[in-house]
Image (cartoon, rainbow, N blue to C red; front, side, top):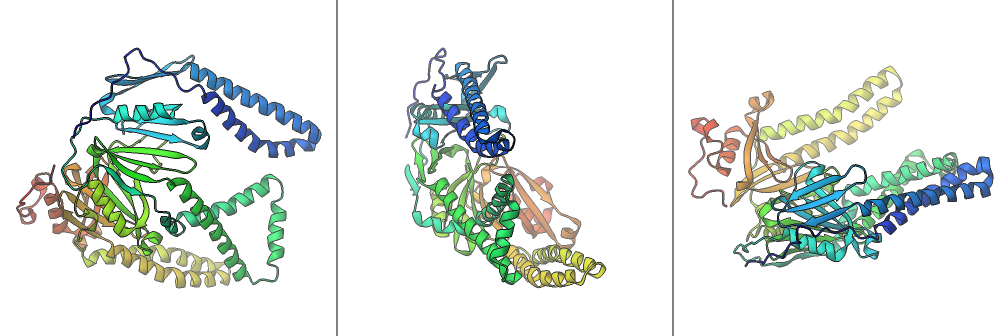
Length: 516
C-alpha cells in the first residue's frame, strides 16, 4: 500500500514560531522567580525589614520577567524555518545569525513534546533529528501550534512505502491498561525517589535555617525507641515516600499511552499526563527489540520493551531520555506478543530457547560476586582490629547479609546467560539486576568483536559482541564456550567471520541467509 506524498512548502515560504512563545517564557520565568522569592525575601528581611524586602524582591522579579520576555520576543522575531523539497532550514540569532539545515532524506525523527503550559495554549515543541551524534543533528522549533507540529511530522516522516506482508496490519498495537501501574513500586525508581525525598527535606530545612529543629523534632519522637527500630521506621517512611513518588511519576509518564503502526511504515508512541510526548520510529530503521527486566519487575513476572533502532535522537539534550522505550513494564506474555507485532513476526524471537553457557561461566560470576562482597568485610575487619571492636561486629553483620546475597546474585546471573539464532534475529541474554534479552536483526550486524582474557582462555570461554549502528551499538554473548561462540557469530552473519576462524570451528552449512 503506497501513501501519496504531501506537498512541501515553496522554497521562499519561511515561517515563524508561534508568537505566544513570549507569554510562555514570561510565565515560566515568573514561576521560577516566585519559587526563589520566598527564601530571598526571608534573607533580605534581616537587613531591610519585611516591607522593604518585599518591595525589593517584587522589583527584581518584575525586571527579570520583563528581561526574559523581551529577549524571547527578539528570538521570535529573528527565528524563521521552512520545510522544502530537499532540506529543512532554521535561521535564528540577532548579532550572530545561526543557519542550520538538515537534508530531507536524512531526517529520521520528528518528536512532539508539550508540557502542561504548552498544552493549555495549544502549542508543542518539535524536535527534528537525523539520529546522528551531536547538536547539529537536531533542529528544535519551540514552540509552534499543535496543528503545525502534526503537519511537520506527517510531512517529514512520510515515505513512499509498501506494507510488508504478514498478519500484523496497521493500527493499534497496545493501549494503556491502568493495572500496569502495579509494577511502578517494584522498580529501582522507588528507593531512589525515597532517598531524594529525605535529601530534599534536609536541604529545604537548611535553606530556611531550621535543619537543627527538624533533627531535634525527629529525635524527640523516637527518644524512647531502640536504635534498630528507629532505622527501620525511617527507612520504611522513605520507602513509602518513594513508592508514592514512583506511582506519580508513572502516571505522568505513561498516562494516555498508545502504541500504533501508522500507514507508510511508522511506529508511533504517544503518552504523558501533564507533558504529552509523541515519538515516531520508522520501521525501515528498526533493527530489533530489547526485552528489559529489572530485578524487582522480573520477580513479579513483568518486562518492558525497548526498540533497537537507528535514527533516534542522539544530541546532548536527549541522550539520556527514554525515547527508545515503546512499552512500559507489563506482564511478560504481553511484552512478548507486542514484540512479535512490532517485528511483524508470528512468534517473538525474545521467547526463543537459548543455548546455556558452560559451568566455567558460573565460577567466574561466583568469584566476582564474592570478591565484591568480601572487600568491605575485610576492610572493616582490619579497621576493627586497629581502631575499635565495634567495626568487627559491623563486619560480621555485613558478611552475614552480603555473602549469601552475592552467591544468589551470581547464580542468577549465570542462569540468565544465553544466546540463540531465531529466524532473522540473533538473541543474547544477560544480567541479573537488569536482565536484558536483545533480539537483533542479523542483517543489521556490521561487525563482530571477540574478546578473551587470560582467565577466559584458561577456562575455554570467550565473549562475542555484535556491533551495529542501532540501539546501544553492541550486543554481547558473555562467556560462551570458545568454539560455540565463534560458530554462533559465524552462523548469524555468514561470510563475515569465516576468514578468521580455524578449520575445526567453521560453521555448519546454512540453508538460508540472515533475511532481508
